[in-house]
Length: 440
Image (cartoon, rainbow, N blue to C red; front, top):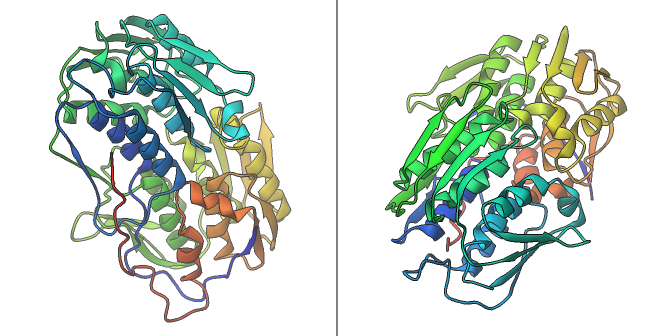
């Protein structure tokens, strides 16, 4: 569907509410299923409803069952077909989890064509090396036979995605020999790997990590029971980044209650970038990170490395396109294998609005800020494109999001909340919190 973004008629004001972190939640769902005792997962107060990715992962994990005293995941050996939609995180985590089902239990993991075309071979090969039986069908769907994993040592290249390493680490406490994971180089999106380790420790796993900031990290996870009473899922920093960007772009202020600059989530890196671009970044009384701006033109961000916070590509791109000066974005090459080729999607969208943008050496994006005009931006099935160009539409009249329904992947109420910044002076984006969906 096409969605016409209404320009903001006033500065942003007050707190914003976003879904709970889907990255954090999906990791917690896997560990809760493997725990000896029932762990309660709670989303932060006021969290918006979860997106399709988190819901599909919760359903898939729930259908596989819980860890049993017999030493397997669930007691049912019957075949399962699990549809993860467009969720790469869910597909990769659930592929690893399915290896722990009872012997000969068959699990078929599928999704939409775009998901099945994304690269999963690295994870499949690593699982096979640890004793799993995983095959890829011609459609791209993955078939897994249960029976548990021997574990041991495995070498993995994390340069394309840290999700492969996280998938192995999350199930490592239930491998017969634990896991000795050696990474061949610096991981893309390293904060997400740290998030995995943080949650493993919350569940009592035996974890030893060395060299995470170097070129040959090594992580050992022993075979240990998993236990946790209550795990609170924090607000999603990727979703928060859209509102921080909106405040910087149109003026006013925005903060997300309970989300501070010290969060381990990768996208809090935007706060430093916004500070460099001229926004005021501070702290509320409760410690939440707050962004303020007067609505004037931002400055170019200069040279920015997105190797860790790769999901900021679209937001940084639209901010840079209207800023005064030049922004050079590096480290974005892995985003070509996301929901869309994000470098191509960003550049096409910006060019449709009159931006000055070019790509050098395949993944260095150079943006010279200038005045933009309205136009139609094709989101190409990528939720983060819709978020960023939606935010830009608050400042640039006439922006139309083509395929805006893709926001359902992670923020189903984003367009509704965005509209509350538009022409309705009675709108309040801080209305009642969403109810929490049940967890397995």
